[in-house]
Amino acid sequence: MIDEHSFKAIYSYCESVSDSPSDILHLLYRETHLKTLAPRMASGPVQGRFLSLFSKLVSPTQVLEIGTFTGYATICISEGLSENGHIHTIEVNPELNHISDRYFRKAGVRDQITSHIGDAKTVISGLYRQFDIVFIDAKKKDYTLYFNLVIDKVRQGGYILADNVLWDGKVYSGGKDATTKSLMEFNQKMKDDPRVETLLLPLRDGLSIMRKK
Image (cartoon, rainbow, N blue to C red):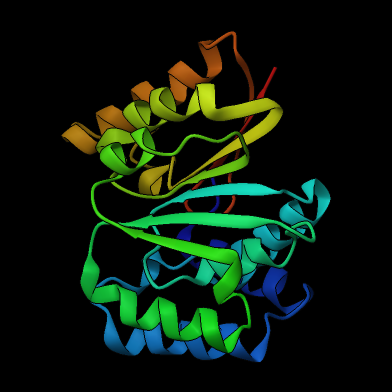
């Protein structure tokens, strides 16, 4: 078992030998830490570079992001969009929109992003398109619901990614709270669902990748 100090050292090393985020992402990450109550919700440099590289490998035309926060992951994913690619991103908290919108403009991707403010369940139901990538990073207790809402909107061979599925290690250390139980159920469902093949990576707080068969 790797202790917390060693994990942080390993993470710092991984960051030091990986490509650096853009200056705009660096500024956004800093502002997120200065102006929000839960800055750790931003994907951060290592996971951000993973999302960017993953998007470049897929070259998606249509992306759905459930949980914009300040837009860090959105911009990372936008780096791999196809020529006419587009991201639909959903955020329930309207007070964060002024940050994400400003940085979408700074990054030159505002026209490639549609920001939806509201409840994800309602917004998803009104999106009539096929997605190449869906990134779930919103209310953890609703992950299974989000999956059920989007699975038929993902093209065959497309991907669903889910963040924070290790939940600070509580999913394997016997956490009893409702959120932990919901994520444990979600992780097991992803393993057992015959419609997807699943890999859970110990990246940051756990990132699950599901490919629709």
